[in-house]
Amino acid sequence: MQLEELIELDKKYILPTYNRGLVDFSYGKGARLFSACGKDYIDFGSGIGVCSVGHSNEKLNNAIKDQVDKLIHVSNLYLNALQAKLAEKIVQLSGLDARVFFGNSGAEANECAIKVARKFGEKDGKMGRYKIITLESSFHGRTLATLRATGQEKFHKHFAPFPEGFEIAKDLYDVYSLIDDKTCAVMLELIQGEGGVYAFDKKQVQELAKYLKENNILLIIDEVQTGVFRMGEMLASQVYEIEPEIITLAKGLAGGIPIGAVLTTLKDVFEVGDHGSTFGGNLLSCRAGLEVLEILESYKNHKFLEKNIQQLDSYLFAILEDYADLFNEVTGLGMMRGLQAKSIEIQTDILQNAFLQGVIVLRSGRNVVRFLPPLTITEEEMQLGFERLKKACQKVREKYKNIK
Ligand SMILES: Cc1ncc(COP(=O)(O)O)c(C=O)c1O
Image (cartoon, rainbow, N blue to C red; front, side, top):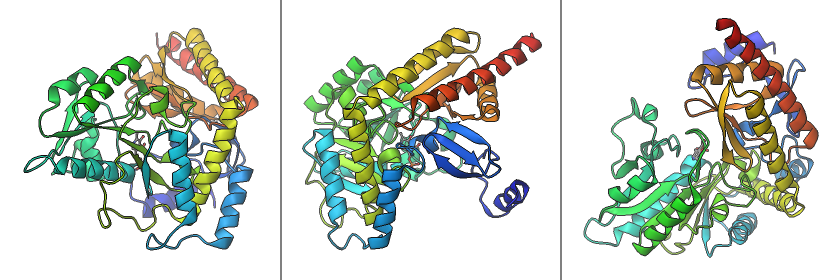
């Protein structure tokens, strides 16, 4: 199909909720994407942190194909060995004494986390404790409850009334002042992904975690974007050295097959009937999840991940040094990084020019260029991506020089 034809078809039949790049990717390998017309791109976005082991990963693809030929789905009314094994693997890698519930997405995982927290709070007093405190600039999903939990005003237009029982703190210090006898949980991302690739201070997080534990208030860490080795460890919570009662995962967990997971040390809060999902944790997604974790665990154990993190870090700081007229700082941690542009206009120009040069980067917050490359990206792919990004930066610099 010609690109123009596809643009028309998309316009005619798809609800216009996305501002799409006008490209038709037809093939991918590693950190490379190829458009239908044959142009190649270095993918520093990995489908917004989903394709954690790259595109067309041979091991993952073989596992998926093998599972498709055996059995895709049986429903959660029956035992599922792959689901149980994936839960065991997640628990082992987390180091927590926990159980898992599987859904299909990040928002669903957060919905489930909210339900666990509300049920936990229900036992205290007549109305129980139901209030959940979240953070400004956070992002927790697109369902009504997770939108309400999301601390970015722009998402709250049009869709009221929202579920009650959420309050948004300005920062970690403000959380303390919002806690009252109705508070059951605090929910946060350790590194805010959509809100500007902003990493919270480790010590401040640890102090808050300690305070919450002492006061029997749950800590929910939304690791939908930070989890599954993106920080160099299975969980960002491990990097921050905290033990939250609830952790949510999705995105990179099955390398592109939809999945969401809630990991909780509250092993007995839910009973039969409290929650469910038709597709959640089906055989296909769990087989993919098991394969992804095996690949990434081995990648980490061989120190490849550490090397990639160091390389990404040095490329980003080199860009910052060379283009100090365009960027303020490097943000984020691990393989989830940002270059904070000096303005929204520069951010937009960098995104557009990078795309033209053949490198995909993402928008985050008001002015941050976000990097979420496949964790298994090769040295050569990273080098090529940054060469292209530099060309894009050069173009943007020239544009602003001419304006002056
Ligand atoms: C931190 C965080 N939580 C939740 C979500 C929602 O995930 P999903 O789009 O899979 O529902 C996202 C998606 O970007 C996210 O980054």
